[in-house]
Length: 629
Image (cartoon, rainbow, N blue to C red; front, side, top):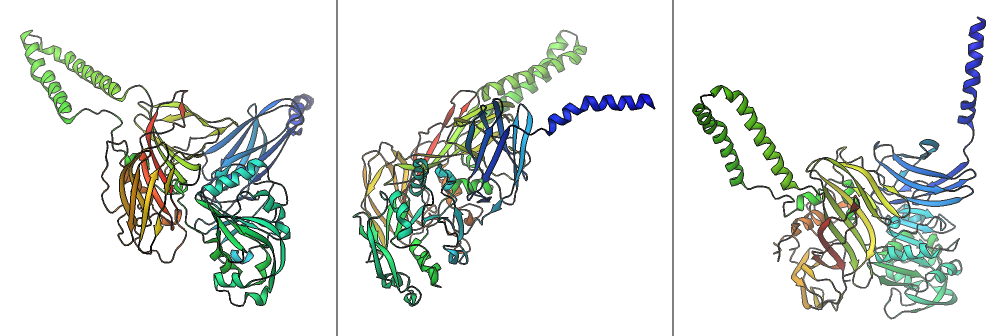
């Protein structure tokens, strides 16, 4: 009994230091805000920010932050950060998360877990417009919430400085700025507008900071406040008879409409200007003023006039569409012809049969067939393996389909790169991407590919030890904000039956297999080289977009019509890129969404976005989707 007591005391003395060490608080403190609003709200089809603040009161450490999606156990996103003693750092980790899932964020250092927190997430609907609101009063636009618009209150201090992290918003409304925007945040907002967003800026007394921040892109120059401004024009633009019963008059800014802008009301209360593929709308009064009217929701829907967007990456992530593999027009390997295979099989049969028999009989050693037959089989199998290795080669292949979305009057664009990585044999690779790249993968409804865990370090994005089976094509999606290298000018006009005018390629890029498209209507152009001018005569009522065969003028890597079919016709759900529309037919026609006129054209040039084991080995094509008006 005494020995047992002594043994227990000895064990207690041995274990006590480790228990105390395990319970001692970490010198690193971490706080996290996730979602579009910092409160866990996110859109399943788009990226959202996770802001992580770290402080280190101890020795220098290297901390690995890991986002773990609980409904995809093996899919993780990491951020590696050096954290010297006494340092405080703020990082933003871009996250894309499937619908219906939760997540956790884990911090480790030297393989030891320092911190863990479960992240509560609330997904937004995929088919209802999303409005982000910068205002100290989160109840502004509450009438829109009841009218099938999702209003997300935003914090100016949490607003991302990456335009791709703003893509979930259809509209961002700025009633007032409670904190000054950083230059990077403002640039991201303007880039987001160029790429199709709608920025609504309010005036009045509370709008002074917002007007000052966005003065150079507003459709008006803003003057002093006017009092007792009648609301007749606001009633007119939305047929809101009786608005004056709730809002007799307004306090509004005096404005002068810029020449390139459009006055929606004749008294300057509402004006707009097109910026790239998006628009900026200025309301010269406090955006909360109309809250007293029951018709407020209809008024703002008419003013905003939201157009559907082409959300390529989101629809490819959420619905099965093997765009790369199904659209290849060329074999990636030089496979032997049928005649060559038949000759090889015939040679094998002749050698292992008649020739072997005749040779052994002439030697009077037929019993050696027990040795020569397996030997010949091994020789032919070895030859077939060597031949297949030669055909496949020893270098990994990367094919890239870049889809660039831009506008004629914008230097900015969004590029969705689809990368197909093909390995000649089962092997693991290290992939390196630019630091502004956002990497995800195609949906294929299997667990294949869930070992793709991108790691961010503030400079590059890497995927290490990505295993690819022999002759297997792994497809990744890489999203970036880029420069629009295609520059077009036009003078198109609409006469109620057709679009007419001239189109000029003023940029350096030659467009191949080009066409002008408006909704279901298409005019084939063919080659539009740099400096060339063509006449456009696009009539309504043809319904010929993707219904007429488009003649390709060259041998191409991709079947270009098949690519367009996948984007604009064969999508598993129109709701993935089109907002709900009760007028859609049961079997919809292929169409460019919205009211815009677009040029679609191809280039055989592509900008590589990935290095594999330190080498650039990409070839591919680029599809440009450029909005004219």
